[in-house]
Image 1 (cartoon, rainbow, N blue to C red):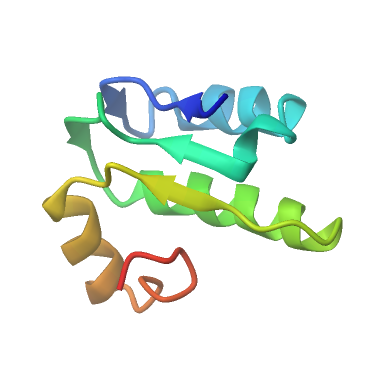
Image 2 (image 1 turned 180 degrees about the vertical axis):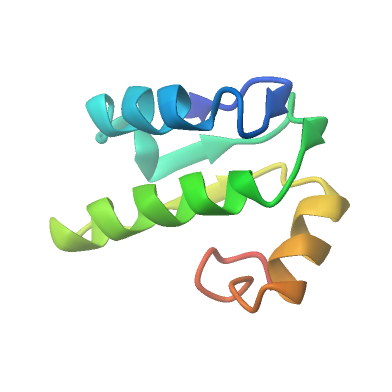
Length: 86
């Protein structure tokens, strides 16, 4: 079952979300962005932290239903390929 990102990921909830995701690292193999609407570059920090944790245990993360804005943002920051968003 994928880990479902909330509607908003900003500086206000990023730390909590990152910790919640790390507690559910098995579910992080799939991250569903279908509800994600309000976000800034902080979401990339969260996704990269999860990706790093999974790589450390030999797993990979797939991001599903990424909004176009997220793909563009990841491209601007040069992390689109790392997150499988290219």
